[in-house]
Length: 200
Image (cartoon, rainbow, N blue to C red; front, side, top):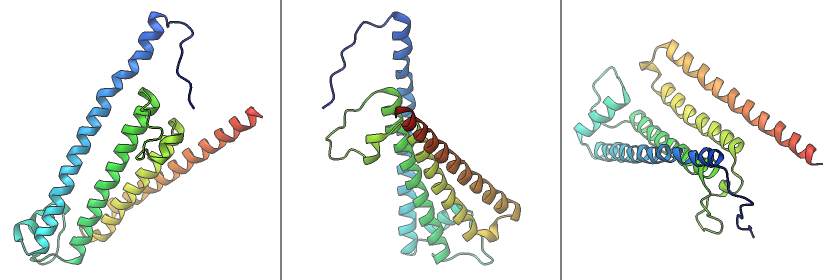
């Protein structure tokens, strides 16, 4: 059971002001919540277009084609497998970015602003039990790799509409993301071992 916080002495004015300044981050997290609402709207617009196109709506199909930047030798008159796959990958991309936003909002608020006191709540995220700045960085790195993978897969599926240099640079950037995430994870592991050895 966690003990209640009992201040040994009142903070001096300057340290108190500095400590209270963490609340300046609150509008940033509220802004990210608003951004997530935009992503939810975008998700449903694309999903509705996909369902309408599946039932033969030509306008919805053209909206999908325009949003994807998909080009073909002949005019697209019906929903085909490639367009469906690209749209579904786009929807997965939105979901993964939304997950990333939740990690930043919840984890960042819990780590840098204030405790949420979610202990015992049935919906408390499992990872929130041991979240800190290092864990958050690793999880964000893995999420970014997942998002980058989806973008790369979309580019390869629609490769005919991309310049070779664009595909090459997307692959290089994805590889840099992978190496960066591995470096962060390795650094975090080494620091964890160092702290463990220091305690003993």
